[in-house]
Image (cartoon, rainbow, N blue to C red; front, side, top):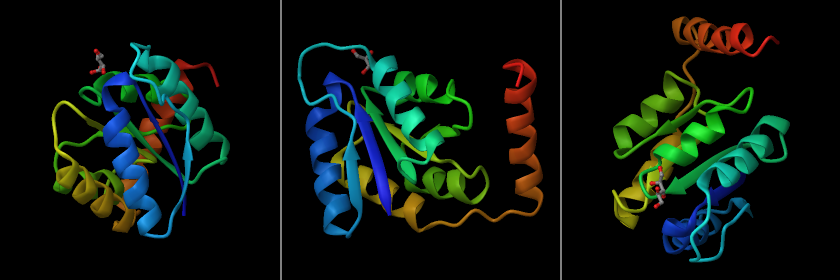
Length: 150
Ligand code: RB5
């Protein structure tokens, strides 16, 4: 799978470890930065990743900032994005099975790398269940359409 990854300055080390982990699993990874520890603005990276996922440049995305909150909020402003902050593997699995999340986010200041790897595993291995969940995901996307004048 082709996976995009983006982060701010707080998450460079965690990003690098997640990239190595994804590659060890055989995935192709596209890094949208930042690779610098210098303070930067997470919305820029959330938007880059959101655009990459929404356009199909990558299949899915992983967003990391201090908490996962800011970068996921920015990604969610891109049409077609369903980014979910996960601090535990169960939420990560449900985010795919029930919400068809195309981006997961987490916080480099909140969880450790081993939890991050478990989250990535659960989310990548889970399948969207469709059915009643598809109707609800459609409702989410209708909210977007109504409010973005699409
Ligand atoms: C950066 O200090 C921090 O605000 C950012 O990484 C993130 O946690 C925002 O939601």
